[in-house]
Image (cartoon, rainbow, N blue to C red; front, side, top):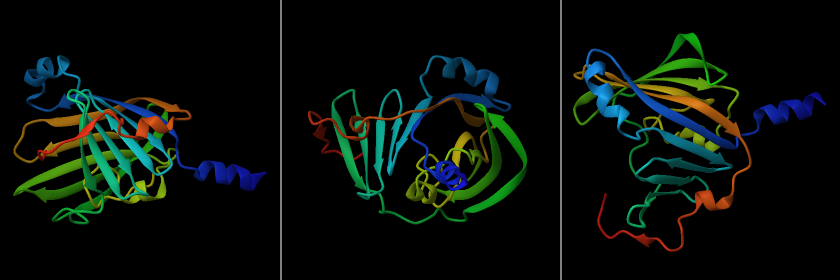
Length: 201
């Protein structure tokens, strides 16, 4: 019986996580009216080695087993296809450090980590809070699509705090709803009626 419990605890999460967006910092009061009129949150779905990230304007499908990801534009029924393994393994100057604090987010205890890296000559910082009770699939742990490339995780990040050195605000993505449920295969497939885009993103 104990073995069955341990296996169940280590099983990858299947279901959806919905994130909402907010801002903190000096510029937050001036940005909040703009954000309130936008649909900037997203919902992440995981089933096995497949992930779907659904925003108001686009959908990203990741298939680790097929080494592929797709960016779908529902507005004009088009999509772009890419190899997941293309590009560098990690970002320049990438460092990951543990934080001593813990948080309860969407009912889950989360531990914090801070990531720093350089991109296009700018220094970025991302603090994320991961719930160890929500297990990504093995390949998703190695390459979590909502975190900078090269960051490895143990659980799903339920809060992201994204900052850039010269900007007076921090962008927050925080989970507000976690649903463990069976998902349909159709969620992770490009609709057959959609056409492959000829122009690059």
